[in-house]
Image 1: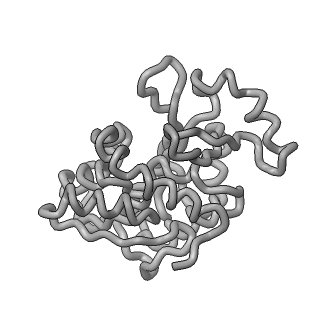
Image 2: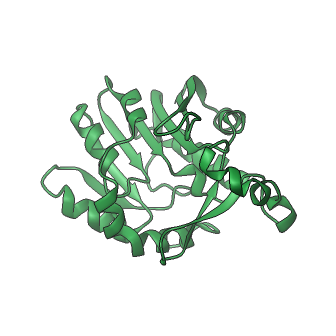
Length: 223
């Protein structure tokens, strides 16, 4: 299966860390509650080991869990084999679903792994394509103003001088290698959503541990 530029490396890293990730990342993101109250079919795009997919299923959705990483999908299937959720391996920029397939889409902590402004916009455009009219979409991304990255601010700001974009950096996972991230400002994430043709319903910062937002959260709708 072909991958968009830069995407394959992320998938391969997550293949290597899947077991460790499954053990240490078990709670659903708080913002997944934004999709509670809906019904029909939900897509968890970039499902990882399934913690948000399980939350969607508990809300009453029929869930399709999709990820690029084979290792993550194996961990997902092992953990939720009896829950009746479908799983699909795919690239977020080339979704294997027909137009208007889903009533809701969760794209949680994924867009920041995609290199290139055009690719990130393309991924959200693909989500719009496969969402039904009136469907709700949740997108979250790591914030550029996290306290833990203040020491790396020079590298983050100087990334364009090295051929990247403002906000690009690599975050290590033990000895397994580094994960690419594009850290967002709130305004940049909102613009990415709007430029892809979606209507923003709600936008805010999500704090997990610190005083500053670790994540930006956008709830959007396909008009």
